[in-house]
Image 1 (cartoon, one colour):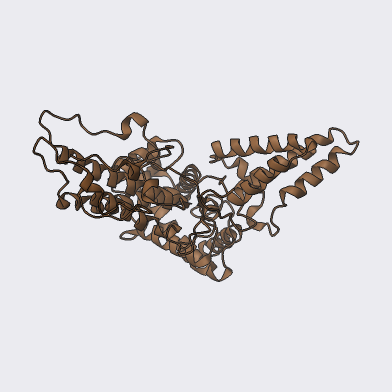
Image 2 (cartoon, one colour):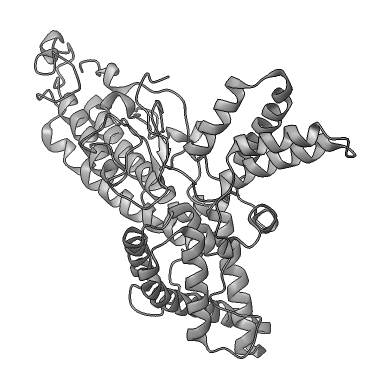
Length: 454
């Protein structure tokens, strides 16, 4: 068997992946990890091929590798899509054999749910845009299949793409030199299946819905249809995706503590609050209200079924079931959707502060970096306390947050006064700026860059 084109298959910094395409396996991984959906297995379990048996075929092993890679790659791209991550440079040498995120020279998280957005400013054709990542990953997989099949393949800036296989001698053991092309036909199908299954599971988790088998649906196919209609609304409304997703945990859907209003009035109020929080177009508020109605029906359908499984629930009134359904839904959303996001616009302001800091500003810069790191290491805010502390009445706020320079000016002014502990107030302001900047929707356009940019 000729050696693999390792230049095409470099593996570097690990992030997260999963090892199975089945919804059951995705669900098992999702609920076994504290942070939410489909998190990483331990490194030792990432490559779980059985040990080779005496006389085993290298071609069969390679075929198995391609199929495992296809499943993991599909799961990885589903993860990127669900969280709004855009890699930015999906050349074949930036894709991993074991389904890891590598070579993040250019990357970003979408603000508006825009399939055409790319963080790479030289990607003028949107080749690696948010909505193109699935197609580009499959294309990269297909190039690998062609390469190990001895066929001509395409790679970026490689002059020997049609001749490299001629440099490899025929194996001495009589086994075929290249993988038969028909062996590679299953891998693309497995990639697509893995993407569909794992994206559906991740999105259900972000919506606070159950991923268990056999959970009743308010209508046939309701959970998957809710996922599709939610992303469709996000695209039409130009809502900020992470903010809108997190806002689902901060608005009422299944249960309301206040009395007197009918369900439609309450859902309209929740739709207006979510729209304001995420910057969505006002013209799409009615469509969001209709979606929340369907969403509410599915949440309650799941809760009523769960209630039947417990003897104490059999005696509960509908109001108690709605209260419990709301609590479960909110907890699930907070567990799957982080409050803090690595917005490049915020990180750009923060890095500019650190680079240009004067002696008097270094303390503020150090505090800001520490707060940012701590927030991104623990981004979920499971009990909602940080949400209220950082954003306050986030759905009712009209003004955007201050620039970091404004916070620093305030901090310097307070430090110069004779008020008790004035410096503390300034540092509190910087801490608040960082947390608010990572939690709130961006106040300016996301940073775009390119490989090698300074």
